[in-house]
Image (tube, rainbow, N blue to C red; front, side, top):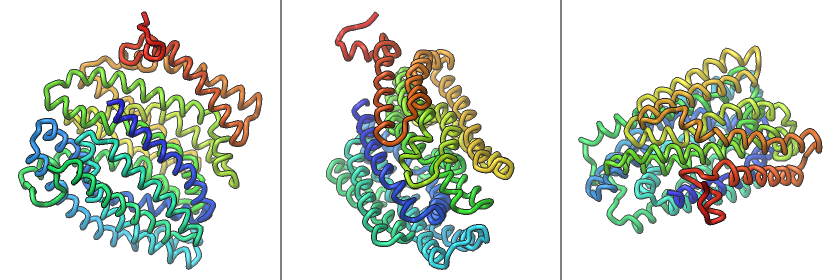
Length: 505
């Protein structure tokens, strides 16, 4: 399990490096206004992905269940049925995208607040169509990854996805250097998706010869079961889209597109942070399904304890650094821009993500793997709706801070609820889990953070070198506390014993 999660984290590291290079490059090349248009296109077309009905997540669960039982025939039937559903829903998404096109044009591109040039409007229209096509083709293109996940073949999957990130980096820099065009940026998405899909299909045929991505094994009797699970997976996606992508659309309704960019810069760090904990969830969910299929679900309580603490360890390490030095980090990252407002938004949002991310990465995937998606899915949907409502209510009196609060408050509420549900399902007391995961960890993070506070206010760190040194010193202090106190004698991960080769008492 650790090897698989480690490969997921390696992929996250590649993604973060690509992300660190591309984010300021795209903003600087396009400009804040045009970049805001791009963020709006991605946000609006992203809702089309909801039509996939959570089928990729359902495919992992169904294929993993049959793989665990050694039933290749049923696994192929699940693959074929999922593929058929994806193709149908992709066609529906394409039709809905055609309907959304004039809405986007009238409500955003032609808005008097946006004041776009004719060339930008033309490029945005074409880019919107290209992104819609990418989203709809992506329905079926994501299924090979479900096959890899179900076989716990995470290393190969991550190599394919990592290659996609590198290709995206190269193409984006090349094409935008030639011309700062939304059309070029949208074209990159299509090319990368097709390249990844072709590579993944070839590897599936080579590594899992018994599994075929075709319609030959379509089984109508599976449709109901897949869709019943997929509906709740879809609700998870709806909630996520409302919570984390609708903000751009809300801002675009009341403000100019450059304000979307200001908010987006403050929000950017949460994509890689989320992927870091989802790397755990990608392994935990099929494992929960396999343990359930073998009648060994009682082992999941230990997995919940162990990986919740590990996820919280990572989130606090990154979160503590950004909570103290986040504004300075953004100043360096987007060197040619005034990021003070984005830095304040980052700090507001970050507090809530310290609660949200460990639960999203561990407790929720366990519930999904056990076939218990109803309550967490509805909770995430409600979280997204509340997010939009609070953002709409607060954007006029408080501006972008109101939108940030609209995201932060529901995040915390969701985390508390889903953690309680997972504990009840696994017959674990929430206080016991929190005491184990956070009892020593939170004080350790606070203690190590005093180093950052001193460097911020005492030494006034700024620029890459000083920020890097501050990070290294903080990680060393935090790591020492983890080894010699937080994880010493830990029943699941005794770092002190593993490093020094002796048991602790």
